[in-house]
Structure formats: C-alpha cells, structure tokens
Amino acid sequence: MTQRYPQMALHGLFVCLLLLVSPVQAQPTTTDETEALKQQVLELNRDLLILEEELLYPANSQVAVYLSLDVGEYFALDAVKLKLDDEFVASELYTPKQVDALMRGGIQKLYLGNIKSGQHEISAFFTGIGPQGQPYKRAASVTVDKTTAPLVLELRIVDSTSKLQPVFDIKQWEL
Image 1 (tube, helix red, strand yellow):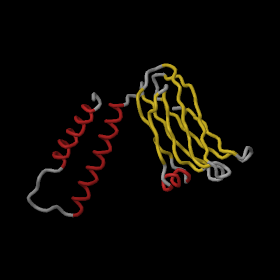
Image 2 (tube, one colour):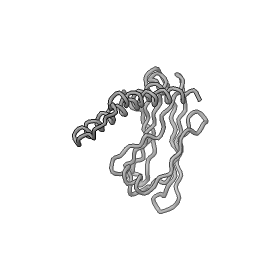
Image 3 (cartoon, helix red, strand yellow):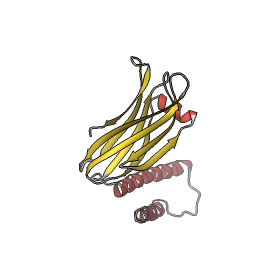
Image 4 (cartoon, helix red, strand yellow):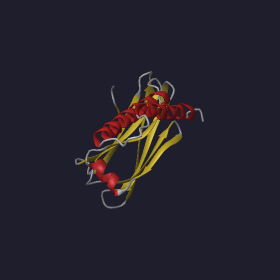
C-alpha cells in the first residue's frame, strides 16, 4: 500500500506537466505541432517511468532478474518460477511468440524488487520439453551476497552440445 502513494504522486505530476506542456488552444494545431507535442509527451512519460523506478526500487536495495535463452535443440521452454528466500516472487508461462523472441536474442525482465543487504538464496524452476520430447523440469540455485550496489542476475538456458542436454544457470552481472 505504501508503494501506491509515490506512484499516484508521479501520475498526478505527469498530468500537471502535460497541462503545462500543452496549453488549451482554440485553433487546431498543425501536424508538425502535434508530432512535436507527442514527442514531448513520450519523453516526459519515459522520464517519469525512470523516476518512478528509482523511487520504488532504490539502488541500495534493488534486485533485478532477467531471463535469456540460447537453446533450440535440447529444450523448449514452457514456464519459469522464481523463488527468493523461500518465497515465490515471479512466475511466467510462455507463448510460442515469447519463446521465439527470447531465442532470437531477447532478454526478459522477470522480476524487479527490493531486498535487504546480506546473503540471499535465489532459485529458478524451469519446465518445458526436453531432448527426447519428454516433459522436462530442472532448477538452478545460487546464494548471493547483496551489498549496497544493485544486484542484477540472469537466468540462462543454454544448449550443451557436449552433454546433449540443456544447461540451466544463474549469472550475476558485474555493474
């Protein structure tokens, strides 16, 4: 509930700034003026979203988890669940379009939240279709030491041609 107040304040600020940027005019605007106004609104919206993220997820407590795929031969992704210190914080069921986008190099932000400094256990559970077309469930886990710097993790699913199996791991990004 406390997170709603900064969000409502930001939305109110957005409306006020929008009114300042676009004063009411009696005459219709030209296409160039309309396009310039649209661009200003888009830039303002981007800036407000960045400000909202900084307010809700300060760097000293921020944790972000992303998902990437480099598979195709040994694993077809169906779902991912993310657990942070014995609490499920995110889960995702994937459509064929989403899997295709990930396989073409996309990275999905799976979770963004706040945690205290100290040690934390992150676990990811992957389900899909395995090498012989059978249902396949695997997990990856890592213990991280959260400092005052933002914590960024990547859940990676990679085909291992030497093992003829998919490999699931969690990589911590260095910022």
